[in-house]
Length: 55
Image (cartoon, rainbow, N blue to C red; front, top):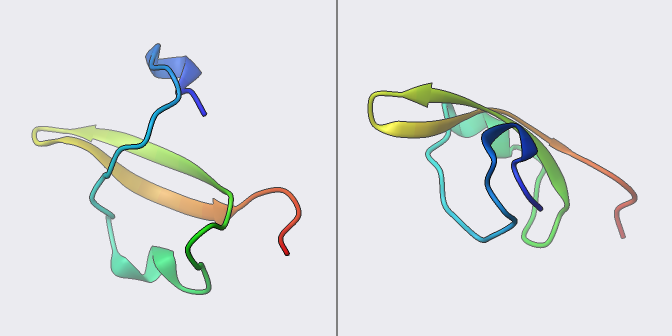
């Protein structure tokens, strides 16, 4: 979905994680909510959690 606060439409992109432990318990296809921070190198994922119902 879109990053409304950043004025970006929905798209597929990759972002580095602040720490690999953020992926613990997640699998391909999970719907997630994220929080990002702006760094000198671009956006970095600081928080990653499942959202909505999961199969």
